[in-house]
Image (tube, rainbow, N blue to C red; front, top):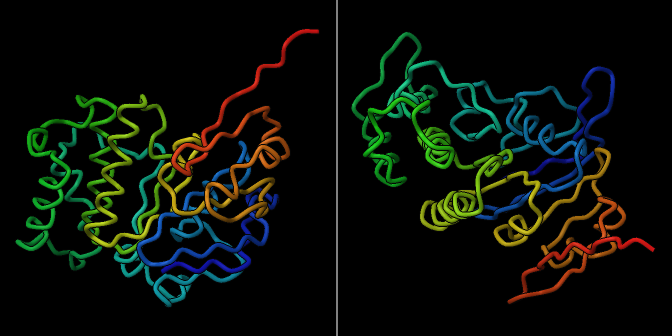
Length: 257
């Protein structure tokens, strides 16, 4: 579904992503991890076509650089860390914005667009909030709305940039369980970034570890979340246990003396 080959991104004259290669198979969930400043969000924004880049990116075999914005939006949907929400907008109207790539220029949303939004709103259990303003919702509820807008685009590839930022553990699980269910039911392919390594290891099929803009490791959570990698790239003291095959990270306190 996605092939990013030797992708580099410069921002302000500085190389933030340096010749990173990532592949994501159809239906797979790959999460990009790494310490602060590693280039995780920048890589996602390049894949979304929001930043200029060097290298090659293809989505479903089609070069990203050859896509017009409307075609790109039909194939790739992104949920940003802090989406811009127009003041006073209702949940329904915000989700309807996801249909923009399917509306003819100077045209209006049709019955098919409203049907698509109604289906997404129902799937994400947002019917009770449809007429509510976004600024009246809780963090977990808003995150579901942001996801709904992305799903309304009907894209094959879903990009999630820190989808659980500022959510408590219960709402984190609620949002990620929903993504996992939709991936299974709708055949979505997911590329995400996450700070929480335990959550990343629980949900992703594969992890891609970036450090200083470069690819440091790529593999299953068990292969990537090792004590050696965490010590080298995060400068973290942890014990890595395995529960049902999933890595569990236990911080090790440095004791005086």
